[in-house]
Length: 259
Image (cartoon, rainbow, N blue to C red):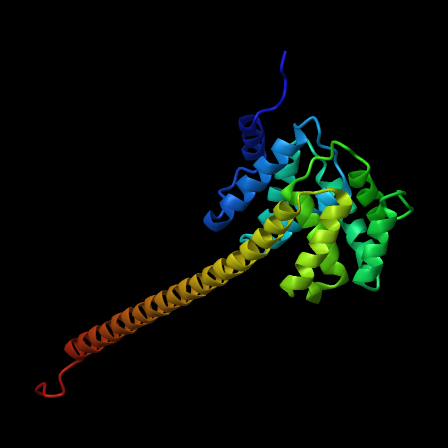
């Protein structure tokens, strides 16, 4: 009997764990990440590694930056992975450890050296061990999330290099050749990731402006409501005072009564 989980199973599990509505501009990010992780995790050729974990974590953190309410962010992240029967804490630990190793490298040349060494040995650090794991696996299952993990490793070493397309492409060619990845696909996935980050940043700015504008409109409505209430209270007070004065005048004894 085939007991492989379906995408529908994963989605149901997610929405049973995170029951609050998801902000519209982020819904696609959540759905795509959840489905992409699902399709990999049920694939017989897929093997978990820290580079993939970093791809998942960095994709979530960067695309969900600015999500409101902020308190939902961790819950959504955990629900995505738990719905896929994965451990969200392990992903974070492995991603943080890998980034720590990357930040300790002084230059891209150091990364290239680690990449070269990974062809023959797993080494003692997380980065070389995970690169060796990919290189030595004849059935290695490439994914966009693996590419994003690699991108974030390189960014932690030399972010400026990635802004130079020629240097970026040259490095990706070297990476693809060493790990035996489809070079064109790797470059395409990296460029798409960078482009989507820019689009999300723009969308987040628009959303931020809309929220600020809405707050100002709400504050203005509240101020106008307060002024109307104060004016009404003042009018009622003035009317009450006038009524009191009129009553007192009517009831006052006449000074012209005959002696």
